[in-house]
Length: 113
Length: 112
Image (cartoon, rainbow over all chains, first blue to last red; front, side):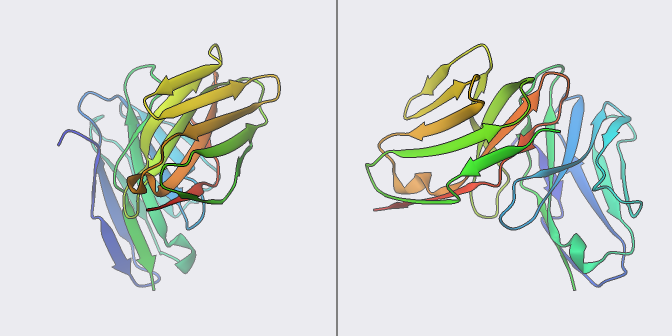
């Protein structure tokens, strides 16, 4: 399968713990995006990378959230001191060059107890 | 910023019927309009998209129409099948951005 992959698929954690998610984009896709999706809502933009550079961040991305794409390939999204309000599906997407089409991964479902 | 409204939130049809989902957008600079299908426990999958220089696009049983003047676009699914049951999202993207704004989704239920 050469699509976008995300790990883990599910994560249950206690409030106050740190969690880290990984996204592997489609090979050679230079743009990588992170979204958050809650029940009954569409995906909400968090941040995106062009190669290794983080070019845009949403106001939703509080200072407890950090994302990296160190070598311009896979990306990680870390949430520090998790809160119950962080419970959501975290989606990763990638796109190639200047193309508008984004391809989504299966998501990581986070539950904060 | 862009605001996308999507209706209805739930749509229930009988197998073989047609289904129509409608979206409106606010930013007249938006020029790319994708539609995604999301099945339970999966990520959104692109099913069709349209650009602002085109009024209509078809792909087998799926079609999308765009009215730039009224700033609305619609998804049409003909001859619906139970496997079409899913949540469908519309989105709109401005030409100056790589980030689309998504609607809140329509849960389509196709009864056999």
